[in-house]
Image 1 (cartoon, rainbow, N blue to C red):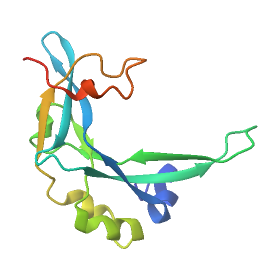
Image 2: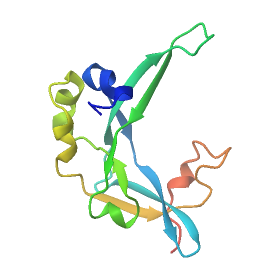
Image 3: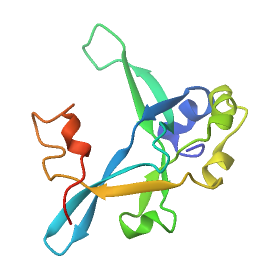
Length: 140
């Protein structure tokens, strides 16, 4: 993040924490791609390390705000499902991350205990955004 030109400035001064109840990843299974929902094992909210940016689309009259979640290589447990995962920050690291006093060393800290379950393939289909049933476990 600190070395890539696209993220360098945001890494130095425009950091955020993106709260989430969990995230989806698609694992390859014998019958195709299957979405799984991942969340903290204790059910608490995850704080993803993020960067934000203010920009203006050519021809637009107003600034846009955007954010990105920082991802890293998957830990051993997550590798069963995917090769990367979001960087989750511990609550005690929030201030250091936001103030830029801490950096990429936070990405190497032990990761939170996670849980996962298979969910419906309706995930990520147009019209299903915000549907709370999409995190419900399915058989299998």
